[in-house]
Length: 451
Image (tube, rainbow, N blue to C red; front, top):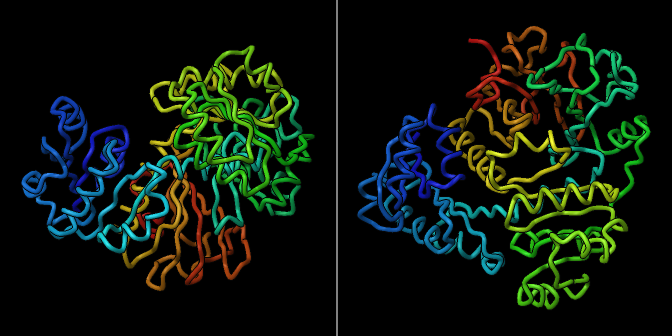
């Protein structure tokens, strides 16, 4: 498979990093220094130039590409690049488009201009944030089986009754309706078995339905009450999409935005919310605006350090759920050490979605990848597949499959029913199957089997 990527920013680099081992990648960017840096790290080809230039695309042999991705910071350049690529013969074309003004024209742009898909980091991140707010006690949340199953990350402190419990006993305690599928222990990531013991200080990833996960939280003595209000700091594109989603849930929203013109725009677009023109990084402002009275605080300014400090202050003020947007991946490892629980990184979210699409094309005809999440500092992948008739796993009990190490089948979704499989369960045609693994290069469901 040949993939052409226009734009050597963080999204473009992540795509190269995730796909270069299984695909032929050509990277296009106008900055030769950035191109050289990525070229030196990964086995890819590179072309210096404007991705919307026909001659540059011809030099990159775009007409022979299976997937063309335009992920520069310019919406218009991305759209034009995809139009040209489609005319030259690229099979699939995807453009990163961030401006909310294009949101209502998505269907027209795709159908009329021949673009396969438009991806929006801010809109995708808003969807993730909206889900996060459903579980105030979870550090992170991922969804499977059309939202019927969620995987949440929970910190285990020394007073937790789960300490020293085996996962076999854990499963029995919840009638087999919950599954611990990942354990993060210091710098180690464990794909557990039934004999694995939960330790104090672990972060565990638990899979189950929303109803059963709420029961789980109640068992921990944590009231997982619904978040009904939020204070948002920073009025960017992500904020626009997030407010749109939260208003549909009837949430009480206050936005603090330092720029007067932008604050007025939000006040005009969303008369249902309270908009304050002030510096949301000022702790006195936050106190005056009653931050402690809100169920959640979401820091979405354009500066990572400001978002971190706002979230830490909100946590100090006993706000139930505190979330910070952090763009620079280099500082993500430091955040648990300073006590910050939940972060969101739009560039990673959109890069993971593109990688899932590319892997699905690699697996065409074998099994369709529905979901892909990078978890536990990206050391673990959680994936969901639709089992096809020609899959090697069909009809064979899991205990009889030679499944790769550190790989676990977590959920089988069959005709509306959820199965947390044991060794005697098997996969049927049409099942949606979720797995977690530390193995690399899992493209199809059959890739979980040792060859």
